[in-house]
Length: 520
Image (cartoon, rainbow, N blue to C red; front, side, top):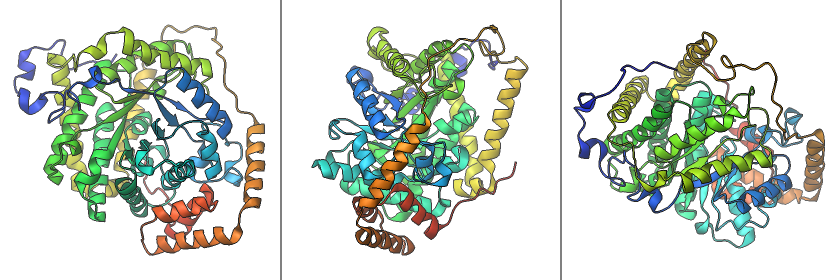
């Protein structure tokens, strides 16, 4: 395991700690101990399982099953073509349709996913970034068709394009027009969907790319500050939208480090929002987050060991005060989860919630010499990155220089080297290795899914009114060229049966495609 700076910790290690300044009470500035006064004693975290595969009908069946098993919120995973803004019949989609998530091309697809699910009573998280404005438009249009007022819709849109440039690499257009699209979705949620979180600033994928805990903390929070500044410059009032921002963090293997990371995130966000933007609404200072256990920590060898890993990571997220949690399935390093594996992952959360006794006390590790010292160290490390990013002119300039990308690349190399040299033990991989392999059932998405999806899309396109569609897309293109407010125009386009690929293709034509210039 990684060595700590000290063998043990004493009062002198937190001698500079001021309780009211640095910790405070739960639900009060600086929110180190939690964003709500009663935390889980008042309400448990939302239990989500990242779901979506194959066709919309396949995903609808999985959603209904998970809700019947006690899931309390939906989390929608999209396939690679959808994430990249291509329809299922695009040449670049070949072989990828429905493989790593559900294929969504049309409003009809999204409506099929949620058939029989009351959108006003279930919150939905959608992990989509480059095409986020199109998917939010489809979600609003689906609610319109169900007769559900938009103001009653709850959920989260990931919509975090900055981390795509940094880590995940699923983008469409360059940063500046992409930030404009993000601001349009924020405005829409403020004006028409006040219960909806239009932006979930994600450190998860930054960590999955190889970042350290400090880098995940620093780059994620700085991305958040970048979005806030962009929205303010766009003309939005910070106290109108900041309470609806949320975050998405990775719950990794180092138990105490992860807990300290979550606590430091709340404190640092509150301090920086107060210092940089002079907010007045306390809710604008309170960092609320979803956590997902670390996919990169799962192993294909001895996959049943992943159940123990996920349990420890989930415990860290709960002890760190998450508002929402996804627990990975033991088979996710091999394929999308089977129904049985997803159920076991959900049961892991339910056992922690109802059998462990942990939710009964708020921030039970608060005051620990070690945890408080580690929380301080995490915050100091992140502030150090903030200073570097400020000096570069902000996150967009840093991305264009390749700074966060290089930092993560070096951290990933160092981690891999430590595993190869056995400085870090990974059970079943570089120690306690077994020759025989353990077979686990795998969810397989066959080529017939893609063929059915393409055939259905062809039928959908043949039924459309080409004149109404063309007019809607022309209005959207004109609005994009004139830097107008696009959400109403995108909703009009999807209601006139424009596809995700057509809308994203329009953005590529107007804004251009992004090409990474960073060198390693």
